[in-house]
Length: 349
Length: 231
Image (cartoon, rainbow over all chains, first blue to last red; front, side, top):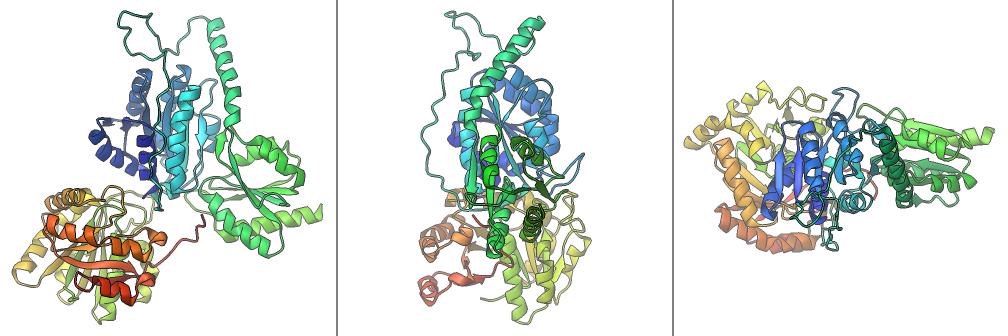
């Protein structure tokens, strides 16, 4: 199936029955799939009048304790940033999918990873984080969307699937055998009607007293500490690597080709693929820095994740950037050339 | 298999229409016809016939495609040259339609030429491409809905079916053999003859061809490109 369809199927498997969307290339198949499937499952599919309306509908469904999702692509996600901030201010779970395209502005429709900063740094105003998962296959589009709902409910944070136009549009075989029934956790905070039996719940992001607002922020950041155990990454030929390539999403697969070619030329290269972008697998990078002489990040942007890599290793090793932007995709040859450049840098030190 | 002057490939998005249209055009060209692929896809700005520009050039096959194909402009536009696919009597046109009923809308503008041609026995072929491995077209009921939607939107009737069951690079000959029941059920439920079972040329064997002999021609598909995208 298509990557976008796999996301929709993963959400359905996780018990998501409320989807609110607005079409934009290259993620429209998520909406199209939900429009076909959800009504048959007794769920709600609604094409909203705008991206902003869609995220606000997610706020409503989530406040009522339901699993809800919206999806868009880069410019549409920027429009949703107000809603992402309100969801976070209200400590509401939700899953938001971003199938990135080139920017800034209207940009283009071709694949990109230039919303790394948006996902990990600035999803909206205020002090908050969203948990970001970066699949690199159609199977992972399904699996991670399923996981995203569970993580989002567990920590009461927004979870984002950060894909790109390649992953959204490409087709691969997918195992769709049923996953463990996604039991909805007890949501004692949800607005489900008191039935005259309990005090009313209030879901709110407005706090009139600054002391109270500060306290809510402190509590939220304590919760974020607990989220750090969810940091995930994958290693490929990384154990003895002198040159560690760091790439997530589609470029991580292109990097594997280049690493094979580099090994063929006698360069010990390996891949460290961040799977969660926040929390970032910083410890794994620090561990890799013990044996690595240099790092190379491969990004479909002007270089964004490179900052997190430098931060994780405290700039203890040179970090080179292999970058294509604006919808262009790095080739294995370009990645190999950058690995060779990194090897030269090491040799000259 | 007898070739007609106009062949339209239509069906669910992602069912393999473009790949099939390109292979079919190459087959027509090998048979000595003057051939053009006409891209009427107004739905998917990714993966379209224009990606195969070089392949078509090498094979001396024409390409009619939107000026905006493979640019960042998402205009659902059709080239004015598309009219030639219907007017040029010496040309074999292979028409690649966009997915589902939305994609089929683009054909509606030309429906009168197809229907006129049919009336004068310069027949056309419009083939519904079906892949049982696609999540929303796993049964005959779903495909019946798609067939009706496409016929309504395009104001044209299908003339046949293509069984294009595949799992991309993971397809096995067993998948093709297993799809027989699906293909035969489609014939009955949709009321359309099975024109071909499309199979990646690399998977075709005498056993496979024999197996399908009484049901449909096995048509070899040669994907014009594959991605070097390791798992």
